[in-house]
Amino acid sequence: MDFEDSSKFSIQLLSTLPSTSAMDIPTLSVKDMEEMKTDPHSVYRKYRNMYPVVFNEKGSYAVLRHADVQCLSKDPRLCAIETIYPEMFGVTSGALFSFFEQGMLTTNGESHRRRRSPFTKLSLRQTVEDMRPVVRQTANDLIDSWYENGQVEFIEGFSAQLPSCIIGDFLGLPRADTSYFSKLTHEMGKFLNIGVSSDEVSNAKSAASDLKDYIEQKIIERRKNPRDDYLSVFLKANDESSQLSQLEFVFQIMVLIIGGTDTTRTTIAITIALLLQYPEQWKAVCQDPRLIPNAVAESMRYEPVVSAIARKTLEVINIDGAIIPANALVSLSTMSAMRDKQVYDRPDIFDIYREKRDRVHPIFGAGVHRCLGEALARIELEEALAVFSVRIPHVQLNYQPMISGNTGALRRIDSMELSWSNQNSL
Ligand code: HEM
Image 1 (cartoon, rainbow, N blue to C red):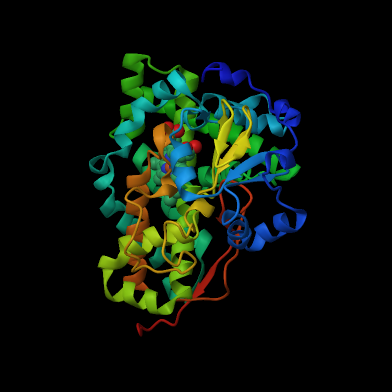
Image 2: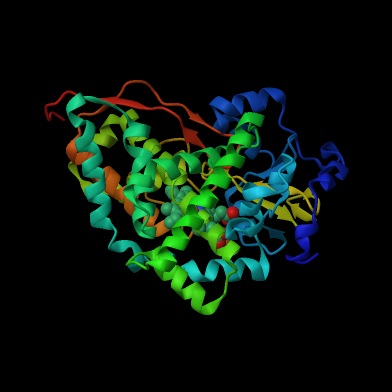
């Protein structure tokens, strides 16, 4: 089966897999699945030391160790999941289905190369570096809007807004639309969790449809009145080259908007929350901004927003004797890999001074699908932290925020309250 043929794969094949016990791959128990909700690291730790792979009864094989996750992310014997995932939930048409069928994130081979190539410029630092002052100003403006209150619901007041404003600015979407499309992307993001409820599936379907309509409308406007923004630039290039069909173009913009919002939203919240839980490290960051890039890298290692990268096997894969069959769903667990003691010294300690770091951060994936927005995400994370540590060094968490969605690909924090007294005393 080559990459293009693989679209014919059906999830039903999963039910024909041989039993997992015969493959010497343990299955996560009901108790493990429950524990995953509150402490996924202890579940992975328990298995990772003994087994390279665990089976999740929802139908996927989780690869646990750093070396295996890194190798398999680039291994041509695995490919992106195409439409398997929506089909698992009976979604076989409509905008949510098309997101998987048409978007670069979940497609393979020539289609993927063609869909990704018009946007590779985004991955270059110089393309996005000039967004830095806008990111800083936006972070300051958001803080200005609630600073005097002495408290804030941080997700709504800051971390949900900053990435949406910035991806919107980048594409030239009006700031007045930010909360509209950010709500839609968030509803779609919830679909990327295997434990999604039927209500969430139907919300995700209508959110995808509304987001598609919204993007189509913006494309019509830009075609009539091109502007000095990347939506106009990408659109003009595509109209001249006809590299992508109109439908493909719409869905690549959707991938950019989805990729550029909830991932960064939750990472900003996790980074601030972790630092506030380790006050000595927070104080150090406030006193020395040169620590910021390390603080961001360490928080993405310690509590990654993307817990796993989904793949499908094109042939049988043998990992140290654990046999994963062909046509199986695999989740390359970045969350487990980044706590692997074979690679990290004291992996369960949050330490922004950590010396041994991955040269290329695993949180952004590897191989042909590696994140196109890494440079932009890093600018947003660094600037958010820089502005926050200068403006509100005396901030505190009102309670420990809960990270949910641990059994899915995209984790999230739904609420996080911060408070401070309005005098600067660190
Ligand atoms: C902390 C923030 C972010 C994280 C952790 C993250 C993580 C990832 C990962 C792991 C992948 C690869 C998925 C796979 O291999 O299946 C990916 C792909 C992608 N990301 Fe990000 N991302 C972040 C921010 C962004 C931003 C800000 C943008 C947009 C500007 C973006 C746009 C994309 C796109 C377009 C892809 C698809 C690339 C492809 O399939 O060829 N991401 N991201």
